[in-house]
Structure formats: C-alpha cells, structure tokens
Image (cartoon, rainbow over all chains, first blue to last red; front, side):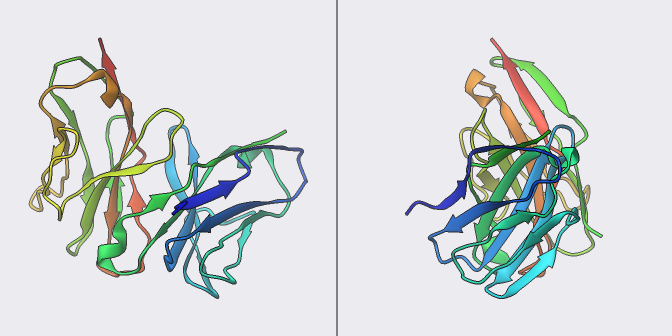
Length: 114
Length: 110
C-alpha cells in the first residue's frame, strides 16, 4: 500500500494562475479531506468528502474547488491563485464512522504564490 | 460548536525533564480525542487516541471529562521528541471532520 500520495511536492505559481493539487489513496477509505497548514494557525480544513460524489466545505473553502468522482482520488483546484494561498497543503483519508477518526495524511504539497 | 485549544505555541524543555502538552476542548457530547505528531519535514501521523489507552513512545494522555482536557505527558523528554504536536477532536457524528488545535511546537534541548 502506498497510503495517501500527493503531487506535486512543491509548486510555485504566479498570482492569478490556476492549478490542481492531486491526492490519491489506495486504502479504500471513504472519507477524504484537504487541510492547509500555516504558522500559528495550525491545520485548517478546506474541503472534505464522505464518499464518491459527495463533498462539503470546511473552515476555509474560498478560492478552492474539489470533486470526488472516485473513491481513490480527491483533487483540490485553485481557481485563481493568490499570495494568501501560500501554504502547505495536506490531504488525509480515513474510514467512516467513530472508529474511523484516525486520519492518514499525505506528505504534503508546499505551494508558493508570487 | 466544538473547539480545541492548545494554549502553548512553543514549549521548550531540557532532555530528561518531564513534558506536558496541554489540550482543552469544548464539546457538549462524548468526543473522541487524538494526538497527532509531525516531525520535521514529515507528514502528520497519529501518536495516540484516548480510546486505546496505550503509551506510544513513552507518551500518555488521559481524557478528563470534568476538566475537558486531554493533556499529553511524558516523564523524560528525549531530543527525538522535538516536533509539532496537534490535539484533535472527533465529534459523536461519524462523518463530521476532525477539529484540530493550533498545535504546540516541542523543542527538547540537549
């Protein structure tokens, strides 16, 4: 099992550019989520999905889109990058239900927006 | 709404000294509590969860419902414990996302 994988590891964008951060998991987890990690702010939830075809907003969804067409993949799209979106992005997955509270995280994508 | 508070952004201790990372939560039901750790340039990983009642890498955490706390403790800190630690809460509802605290950076000084 590769677990949770994320690509790319690093990315530099110019303001206004768009891009997609990829996230995939091979553990057949129904629940997937995206977080951003910023100094002093901890982990903030962007979007999450409880299964294929179902997504919902987290704490900081503005400027980001998601879709969940398969169980395995949960891409995060930046529509028009802004310097405020400079951050480290983590994808996570877990089984549903109380016992599924254990989140498995990807290695992260470090994004810089100039 | 549920909330997790980690009052210390940075905690520095000497090697061999006891460590306590504080975590307080706000939730009306019976939550599930977790500690996650992130070593330098690595992904977050689960350290322990309160329902397991186990000790991982010498760390323990007890859920105190009266004080709504879930402090992480270790009797003797090691240099390799230096990392970012996050406390997290899972509400009763199975598919409700985890709520994370802002994290505490532990620095163990040799």
